[in-house]
View 1 (cartoon, rainbow, N blue to C red):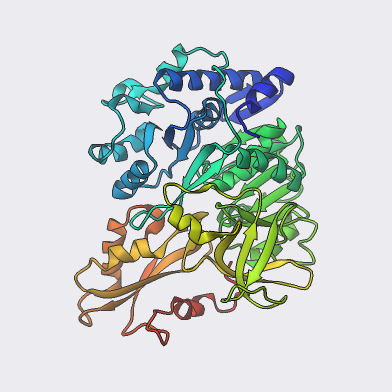
View 2 (spheres, one colour):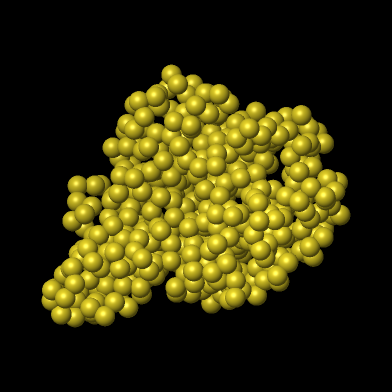
Length: 512
């Protein structure tokens, strides 16, 4: 089971069905398949073979979709990189993934230029999708593609276990963890999630968030596997989303909660203005009860929520279950299993909190080049999430805390240790602890608590400015710095971030 032939199948059997809408471009499956073939043949001419890694450093664009599907045709492995990455963080991921080709655009090429001396990519393997001849050291992607054949590239033998994606979390100053997802997993994304969202070949999907994160594949794969229509925005704009839903008769969307909140801030976001909408899913960050309730009032009967890990376990709160389980994150879909374990690895009773452990056909192949880390999280086929939760008597899952100390800001995983390692480089700082606090815009945002070497030697605002100039990505910037005399600690001397975090989350049923 693989996704190599998905586009070719639709190009043959339903060639005139609308496949992709992006800005002024409207491409049928025949047209989009030929476009992707040109990209695939270009990569082959550049020497990209099966198993080689193609990284993207792109904002949402047709070219990004081209790379995704061209790689599927030739057996290459896509490594989508966040366009927010900078400096050492960017170089670390590119090198860790053994990238052989990188496709970028002018807005981000300057950040690549800063680290190119640290990369091992051949000089002719840097492609620029816009203004190709205007920047030294890059080849013109569009010119190369324009000269390439639009015929189906020679078929490569691909097995379902062959890798298709390597997806990285945002943390980069520690040990990077590239999550390897196979062709079979992506094919199952198309079928299993297509069923869960009640999608069909006539469905119209809108995606306005970044395509480089795993949440995008929750609707991208079903749309293309089923042969529906995929509408892509270059960037998120709530008014444009509302207009597009009405104009294109959009049926399905997945968003991070901060985007849903932005939609709710528009008085135009009502059921009357989005009559075609059948599903609006939330994923990737805390979605607070008050916002769920407002969505249910404004556009009833469309809300789904997915809790899950890119590593391969999910639960789904279906729109038909929201009314009776409004704060749950649902149940495992078909072929998935869920357990809640105590510290000794024993199953707990309903209502008792423990670690969320699951298995599914969507499990990652492993962390790239890190079998040791893989063995830590997948034990006897069960994925240990590190997240804490409980199930009720009906088996519905409720989250108590996110994975260890990780926070999720605007759908991006942010690891506090990466920020802490920057903070403690300041000569006035003795210790640092970073944790997530509520944000109406992003779901969560980082806050730094610090202990100074000498009281009064620096202000919190001065530290905040210093930190935010040095972190490697914008999503790692801290909202505030709190100076403390001492941290709360356990008997073993461990810093208790949960205790520091609690006042900020007081009055909220759960931190999810």
